Image 1 (cartoon, helix red, strand yellow):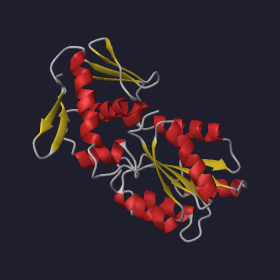
Image 2 (cartoon, one colour; image 1 turned 30 degrees about the vertical axis):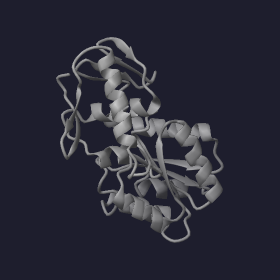
Image 3 (tube, rainbow, N blue to C red; image 1 turned 90 degrees about the vertical axis):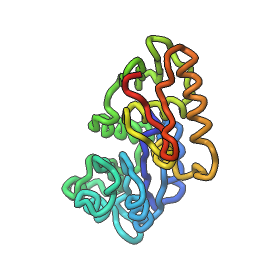
Image 4 (tube, helix red, strand yellow; image 1 turned 120 degrees about the vertical axis):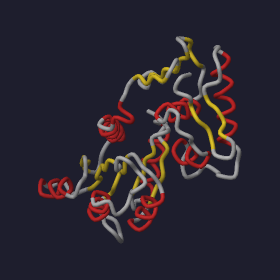
Length: 234
């Protein structure tokens, strides 16, 4: 999958939360972690997430309440559409599943679970969102194949790193839109990215070089003082 997809893992069992996050990062997602309900709410208010893995039993604000807040538009207002919610819980009674789904959860996974099933359920939920659902994305002479993690320009294969692939995928999801360095850092990287480094600028420079090495005009232009834009006619 793509690291321009940002996930939030909310789980008060620290070891489990960290293990889930490590596994999802290996799947090339950008992942943030919250260990309690209040921290989860703060992150949902300040960031745009595509999906939330949400533990039901949290020590302060429970997952059921947070899910209701997401669906009522009280948090996660920066995400459009609102994030998918995958409820994680040890409660396996039918009534509990009904309560979770009625609260607005998109899916329900009972603990203990295998990481492979968690990853598969996340992929299935993200496929419901047309913003990340397409297997092949095309803008001008650029083409990305999500399933194979391959990029092409005018039919020529691009030798992209995972981060360059994710960056180009985000540009192609927003053609002709000026994207600030802060927005790129937020969506393509994760909470551990240092906003004071030149990581975005360096990655864009490498991506731009690879795009022109195979021929054609530079499709990513710099908008002085604002950010970068992928020209759709490229």
